[in-house]
Length: 621
Image 1 (spheres, rainbow, N blue to C red):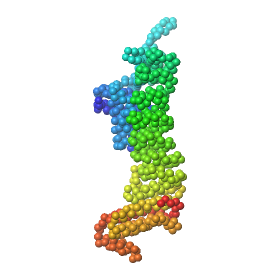
Image 2: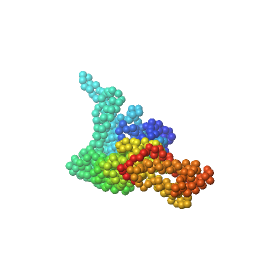
Image 3: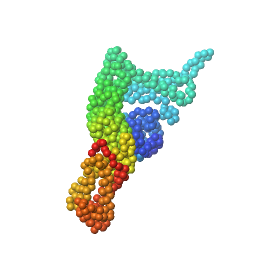
Image 4: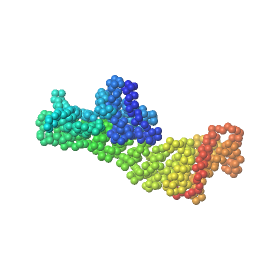
């Protein structure tokens, strides 16, 4: 049943102050990842979202009042509204959430919560947890309860007197079946008569909980073991082997007890269990997989702790249930690979279909430094990666992808990952590889500015002045002159301009004067240069000067006066600019296109003005 508005307001008022998110996009993504992790994993009390998790996992202890504010609810309905409200708060800051996933969180909660009625737990101390409450053993054949009673005691001396002293008991009820129910109360110890304060008393009782729970398990295990031993005539040595705490944890689990009671499982299967094996077997997700014949008992018993974390992760659990991951691909995973696979960054990518479990399982392990880095959190979420190509990054080079400049080029989509990997494959020296990547990135950014479609670098549109400053920084880092670096950039950039010119010429009417002017510009870009007599920077400056003259002539209609008689294009250009005079202020679409081309080229003058003649010892053309 839906929550009433008053019930919703109570929940919102209780947790709203815990949901403060930053406006900075990168900081927000980190917070989003943190709260997603807290809602699906155990976290320490020091974690910033510890209390959000507490309210989600144990809502009956934190929202006692809502049972009086509307019709009956289930625990699951309250938990679902908490998740909905957190989602709403996140979306107030960022419309599209990359990591937060409501379905994953709800799937991680026990399914039975949607059929268990919500009953607020009365606090022993106002605003606190009931100190007498023991944890409710989920899926067990017994219940346990801590109880304090006042007992009369005789004190003998000169005169015999009676006094009442508090004592603690644990009450255990073991239900073998509907007809066999065993009840037992065990006295723990007497309480001191005086405590310094309520907190001192609560702490004292808190220390009683563990021994009380151990007594309850011992009694329940012994009762179940005696029943099974009598029913199946179990040998004494088997009974002794199953008398451990670990074996009792499994025996007192309803699922396994029913199998044992029906003879489908034997006590000998539980001998010499270790802690992690008992924990694995009692995990509800593992029990579900055994019940669905995905796992058998022996496979489940021998799972490592970290393999269990994979199987019980909501993302992998669903893939296993749906048959997308064969169980044998998980049961032989190493501990360190398991830690990698359950990291929120990886499960998020798998859930979004950006990487498959098989691909993640086979990635070279050293690449975890890149995949688990928050620097690439958004990048991997938004982009499709060729993981086969990505896997070719060598171990001695993978740290280059954590270089601040390389990260900035990649996450801002100046360089794609395949381009980076290809560069690393071609350059065995890391410094050379970084330099090649920088040259490629600056060339791409210069071209973006040239076509009036600049890259956004950390959400700020690129511009020529920023580019010049960055060249200075790159040059300093590589101990080279900025002008030398620019000399390496220009051949590539001019080749892109040449391609643009060829594209303009293609399909243009050969009789038009424009095609000859574009050819004139293209002929100004040589295939190669003689470093002893010229430079690429000089070529670039000359090209800009030609564009300036063309642009000026388009405005002043004076091109024909500047053309020398011996120029092979003189007559054509004279006819072209004579026609411009006749048109007065009206320019044709082809004229406007030429004008735009020249304007964009002359806008790059600040870049060329910082360049003087330098020779290059490297060839990047």
